[in-house]
Length: 355
Image (cartoon, rainbow, N blue to C red; front, side, top):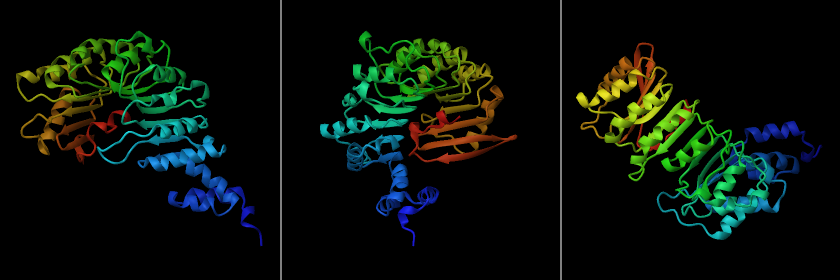
């Protein structure tokens, strides 16, 4: 009888392909032939809200040189609601060593609750990978800047900090030449579009300190000749009355825009519909009706979507965001259908990146 270790590679690959992820560890212990295939799948994506699981996986990668090149995506976060605690320095030290072996890494997501451990990306000479997607919750410091400058294939970037006015923390012009999707605060977005013009999808988060700067930021979007999607988080209605017409004049070829506060019917809503008249390629519009009392629902939303399409005939999707979730209305021939989500999606939903 032939040994199980003599199983053809094609058979092992097929067994592993159809195995549940929970069974991969058992397959690794079955025989060497299955171990090789199971390890590739087991370490391809490291994702767990339990940081001890990630810690042990990184330890295994450090101790077994063959494992690092299998990793294509690494996610580090804590899946315990709002009670996220600082992770010890030895955890981050192990992560840094493991990263130095991941030459095939393409996606890196790190949610550091303290934002202060960006030094794990500081040893540029020992970082063997070129990311395509990064979501990094770190402070913007010199280590972070040097890391971003080293990533010439990065296509999608989500960050939570920006460079302030410190000239020593500016990216070199020409950095991030492949960047297409950016999600961050206004301060960071303003700096990013000054160094790269390849962005097609942009999401900007405003706060009370950045609202006044948003109007001066909008004309700078003209340099992004390929920009098709613009999403603005936390845009107040009083600012939208000036910002939306300015966006329409600057970026009249947008295909997707949100989250624009939908004004109540009346003379003060004229700016909204005048802006729509000039947006001839707009297909998706996300509007915020959280301030409406009562909230428009059902047939009221359908009427509003139809009215929007009168002013912007290219519209195919209208998404209404309320305090309790969202409803996406989809044009189907001459009629509208809809799909509703609950409050778990909120603004972090990636509708703006999907089209």
